[in-house]
Amino acid sequence: NAGVMQNPRHLVRRRGQEARLRCSPMKGHSHVYWYRQLPEEGLKFMVYLQKENIIDESGMPKERFSAEFPKEGPSILRIQQVVRGDSAAYFCASSSQASGISYNEQFFGPGTRLTVL
Amino acid sequence: LAKTTQPISMDSYEGQEVNITCSHNNIATNDYITWYQQFPSQGPRFIIQGYKTKVTNEVASLFIPADRKSSTLSLPRVSLSDTAVYYCLVYSSASKIIFGSGTRLSIRP
Image 1 (cartoon, chains in turn green, orange):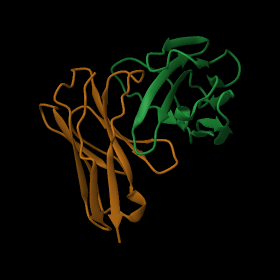
Image 2 (image 1 turned 135 degrees about the vertical axis):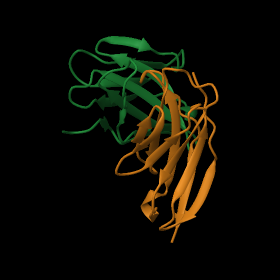
Image 3 (image 1 turned 90 degrees about the horizontal axis):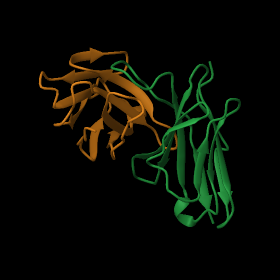
Image 4 (image 1 turned 30 degrees about the vertical axis):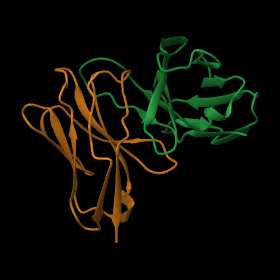
């Protein structure tokens, strides 16, 4: 049973280019979360998606960032016109359910390290 | 959302027991206490979760007092491979997880 998969693992972009980060959740998981982590800091929540729906994007910057989780295929985090401040590790996680007073574990992928030159 | 407070860093030696305490004074009735571990260049990994009293698995133990305003993660007989950042999280819904800065644990030979 493969875990959460992310690709690419490393991505280098020049300022102004677009970055596309992909996340395939664990089999059977329909909830996907994206986080950003700067060096020496904790993870910062960005967005929570279910299939074809954005549930919570309160952590997503208002401009240049978008996310989707289509009916078929991986979840995509898209960053347009990247700037140096976008350099970070971006982690995707998935879970089988998101609410309720019960055991809810998020399974994390290995992350994509984005470097903006 | 309950905020957690934990030490920024801790040092210990191989073979010792390590206890990391986390404060969560405004924990809600529905909140669970969960600990994650993160190695460099990897995503966080679930360690243990509990609601009250004591929980033990093959990796760690989690002690939660009756008032639930704090919790202690206990790692028995640590090894060098336990060097990592440990995050204490408090939440009831997996859609509302907030990671703090964690505790950077360093294990020495």
